[in-house]
Image 1 (cartoon, rainbow, N blue to C red):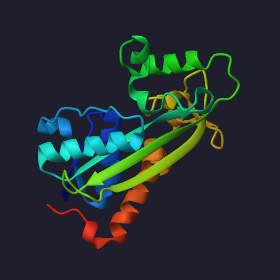
Image 2: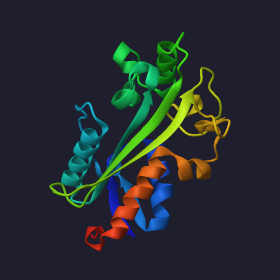
Image 3: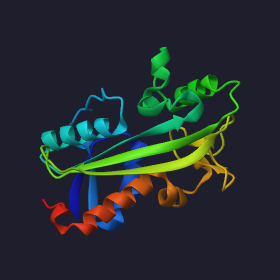
Length: 205
């Protein structure tokens, strides 16, 4: 197994990445287990934040690192919450939680007819902190926002993220189904394809 530090302390992301990467031979170690604090995320784009997090985790661990930056982008809100998805409620002085973030999102959409949205994920993998050629992959998962939460699975905005073609929210999907079609899964599929296409990029300890 190849050890890889995950530049996140989000338990939902850890579960998903662990499930998605284990069959590929990766032993994902969360940065919190290594005493690595969270990196600052000062940028307005997902890719810049992900790159900053990956370099930070790799520099402090001495290991290859994988970071993601992801969130929900709502058309009627000009792409918000976007990079602020994980702390959307904090922008209006409320405590950080999935429930508070969802409540704030629904309040911002009150009276708006356009409910189109998409989850976006960008993954950045670095072999070392100063890797000049990081591998970057993205995934997009289109859906709609519904006012009433449905389902007990997933995390984040999943209970409000409806997949019209399935008639279910992301939170109503079994984990194995979500892990096959989510924005994170699509980004990871692209990442792995790029690793496999270039043997010199395979991570080794």
